Length: 184
Image (cartoon, rainbow, N blue to C red):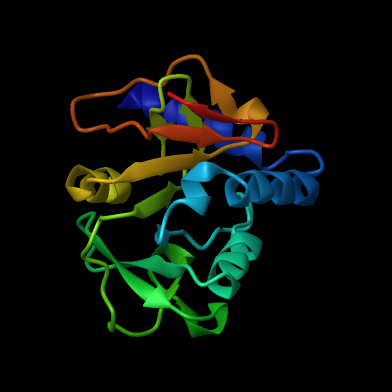
């Protein structure tokens, strides 16, 4: 755990200094929107980005306008549990747990993994799809129950060779960067 904590501090510092962030965010979102992963899904589970994360707002709005069913997470407790709820607009979000924007209401809870795609946030990914998150385990708990495709969004320079993983850590199926979409 100490190794992960140190790595987390180093990589968070590095991510805060990403050059050309807006341009890279747009390229990553466009690579997602042009991918077969996105094109072939009916439901997409996004995250509402923090300031130094890859801004997903453009992709969320595009998915809604293209008729995809869009869900965002809402923390249900402080023990690492969250549920996803349908949104029709970014205007439906409020600042919730950990200063993360989340859906206001509790209607239309996600419960059907068929033809769904989950976009997973991370500080960093490794080449096997393991992620370094913020250490609370929310996405690991969720992905344990999620039986469809998961994809991580990551800046090229934030992909590292190996992230220490334990038995509770679950990799994503694909990673999308500003330059590529690849299976892990």
